[in-house]
Length: 85
Image (cartoon, rainbow, N blue to C red; front, side, top):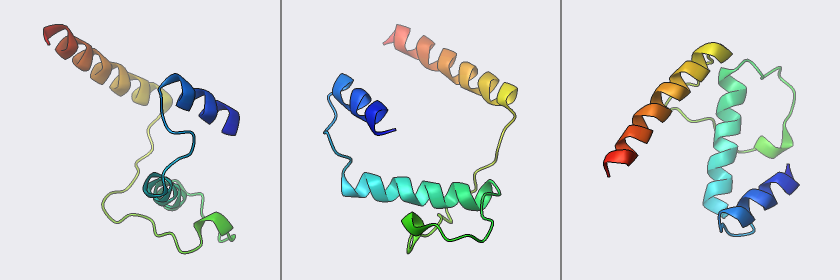
């Protein structure tokens, strides 16, 4: 994961290290996914100690085909908007 992260950061001119606020938001999302996707088996995840899941929304899993369809629909919408700009 670290090698892929480094390649992406270099390609898009991002800082070599994730900022503290972004890392915290990433951990909040991990805690939220653990809660909402049925991953919480009661075991201790040290990386999530003191990190709350968000109460702003719930992650609702989609079947792969449904997710792909939604992604492509939005992709096409944004592609059309980009052509008009």
